[in-house]
Length: 146
Image (cartoon, rainbow, N blue to C red; front, side):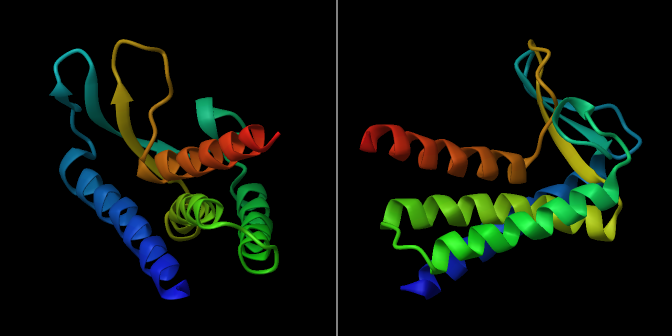
C-alpha cells in the first residue's frame, strides 16, 4: 500500500515542478496571462518569504523549519496509526512542503504564479494548494472526530 502513497507524492511534486518550470520558461520577465478574464491568471513571481511576503529573505530559516516539518510529517505518517484519508492528506502536505523546499534549496526562492485577480489574495503555486488541501482535510477530520 505504501507504493500508492509514494507514487501519489511523486505525482504531486512532479505537477508542482513541471508547472513552475513552464511558468519560469514562458512568463519570467513577461506580463502575466489571463486564464479566466478578470478572475484567474498566471503571473511569475519570485517569493523569498512566506505567504503575503512575510519574513522575506529568510531562506535558511525556512529551510530549517521545512526539514523539521518533513521529518514530523514522516513520523506522523509511519509511526502513528492513521486511516487512509489522513495518510493521503499527509502525502499532500508532504508533497506541498517538499515542492516549495526544493525551490528554496535550488533557486533561493519559491516560484509563485496562480493569481486570483479580483482579490488581494497572495499569488501561490500548486505546492501551496497541495499543502493547504492536506491540512484542511486533516483539520476537518480532527473536528469531525470530536
